[in-house]
Image 1 (spheres, rainbow, N blue to C red):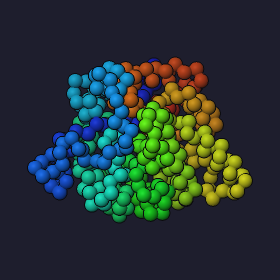
Image 2: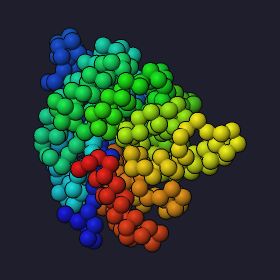
Image 3: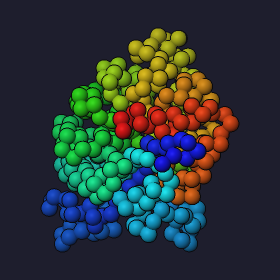
Image 4: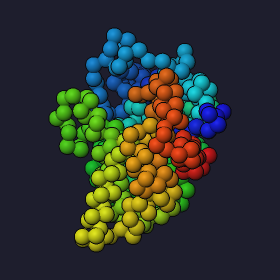
Length: 355
């Protein structure tokens, strides 16, 4: 289905885990809802941070009433099917909700078991529900050899398109050589890795007490850290075929990186083989955006439109009505050409994920 003659694809939506459903895929050592296991309300993953428990409206959701896609459990595979049917989005890539905190797991053994259970769960309860739904895997980056093995299993045995890497929580920056085995394996498998913003811990704003103030920063700032670590610690050059997505931060965080990398490369000389613009134009980098971001026309004018892709974020901050609104605003933009609109709304996502 197309809107105004344009196809729509979603580079970043979210599933919402059911603890009871996920429990069915867990090894007995980590059963979540069972005698001797964790209480159901505790959940399988660490708390994302101390700011996401923000106050909600009378209907239980922040920002007032929301329009969900179906009568099914919000964020379930069945709910996602209805969301795609109603919006006309042809394909979606979906990321975790509780699982965004996977980087904060301190036990390597538990991380290994939890990632394996999560991947079995999403392959069965999402990918098999609808071929248009593409969940990404979680891998235990705390233990690179185990992460390599789980990435290979997720792609080869479960048919998942790649894995999410947490932007916060791990003890080392993502460009560190400690993680090289994972990047080598992803390049060999020709699968994607997606860095996803989400937590305000470990980025210098742990003491913020206002959710909105934290939210302004805790999505884009960790993506800046990750991108620069990849660029200046050799990951982008060592693994030139590696496909990396940077999601949930919009496009504007690239502006200071473009300015500073150009200036510092001229002044100090660069250790990277390419400029930031060349990396962004190469086809192996994807930057998630809403499509109607005010900064998108400016950034695209600086580095091209090739890296930017529409993200629905359903059902987190965006409900069904919000998704329609953002798509319509993109289609009606007078600052983007028709070709740029189609690139953002579908073509870049299709190329990057290889649908």
